[in-house]
Amino acid sequence: MNTFPMLSAIVFLPLLGALFILILPDRPESGRRTSLAVTLVDLALVVLLLFSNSGTPSGQWLRVEDYAWIPALGIRYTLSLDGLSLMLLLLTTFLGVLSTLISWNQIKEKTRSYYFFLLLTLTGILGVFVATDLFLFYFFWEIQIIPMFFLVGIWGHEARRRTTIKFIIFTMTGSLFMLIALIGLYTVHGRQTGIYTFALSPLMETSLTLDIQGWLYAAFMLAFAIKIPMVPLHTWLPDTHTQAPTAGSVILAGLLLKTGVYGVFRFAAPLFPLAFRTSMPLLMVLGLAALFYASWIALSQTDIKRLIAYSSIGHMGLVVLGLAAFNSITLSGSLLQVINHGVSTSALFILVGILNERIDSREFKDFGGLWKQMPVFSAFFLFFSMASLGLPGLNNFVGEILILIGTYRAHPVFSAIGFAGLLFGVIYVLRMVQDALFGELRGAVSLLRDVNARETLILGTLALGVLFLGLYPRPVLHLFDGPIRLLMETVS
Image (cartoon, rainbow, N blue to C red; front, side, top):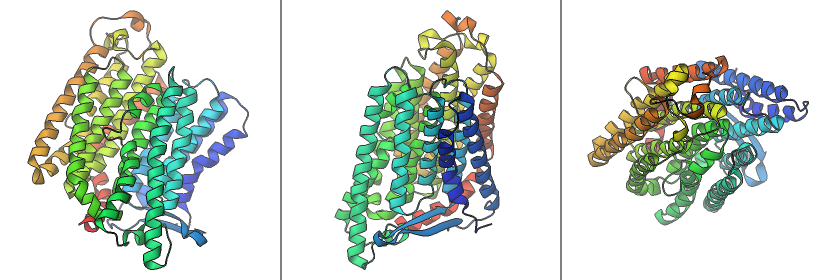
């Protein structure tokens, strides 16, 4: 079984599907059926990986594919799988299937090109989560950005062109700094050892002064902080979410933001442990600032999609707090929260997309009384809203409580502030539910139809994920144990 390049198949199957779409007749059903078939097969491969490695408690790599690529420059094609990357592959392929399904009737123009870019984005994200040669990681990091630019720029809403320019400026600026730091680390390691390589493990052994570590770490962190995003580097996200098509928002919130957290965990912290430890207090402050700032700004939003975008910034701020508090409990909570946020926030964006498809509006003033007109939709909306605010028994509660309890052990003041920030966030979630679901019927709401079978399938699947992660998170946390232990040993 291990002789089959399973990781390569998972990463490049969407790319092959994207190329296959280009030779198909330009009919709507061609692209979407191919995309659905490809993403379903990819999901099945990841599930097969999950069950074949579910009993492996080791913190070492569960699977490695390593081949020479450009030997003259020390560049190798190395894909590696551990518990963290396995869960992120599962999240990516799962949301890839749902992104295809939710686009089924929403995308009516240039459908072949749309699914080409959708699958290409998935290849980039999948590659980011398994590449352990830093040149290969950077290659996939760039691949995920470009097709996302086109997904928003072509199939987005009215202000999409200005938004995509802002998106590309932010993300490419971060990528440029990371590339400079990557070349710098490669050069320093080569001069020290006589071996020029981009492989992660040897680069972790590079001897660096705190000053040099600080500069290289700052450059890596700039790229990752933009993608998370951390305040004050967040301003591209609300605009991009507001203008993106529904599947674009699902990929953005559910997956692209996670590549930033993954980059900190997999690369920034172990490559530059002294600089990372030095930055921990600042990161905790920035995480809490994002939590409070996002909640405050969300209260004033009139666009429901923009409100959910700001809630994402707040949730990711809590994840950053857990990373920076840096003990086994907070790290478990942060990694679990990465998965939780990908499920529950994606569901909220899908719900808004369903509503926007029917009423062509995202403004609260156009809603009201949805519970009377769309009871099934409203039940799902209430369920995922409660998951977002951390109701016990649902997924976000587990991650949030782990982060706060773990932070309390070493930094009780930060934990108390974080708890207050979560309470603050409850206000805008309840306001969103009140304004959208209850009250008198407004405008065209009385003419809306409830969710259909396809939409119910999508939302029901996400609801099962929320319940599983909320009631029985231990299998997922078990997969994180090994990577967390290795990171703590490296940084400490």
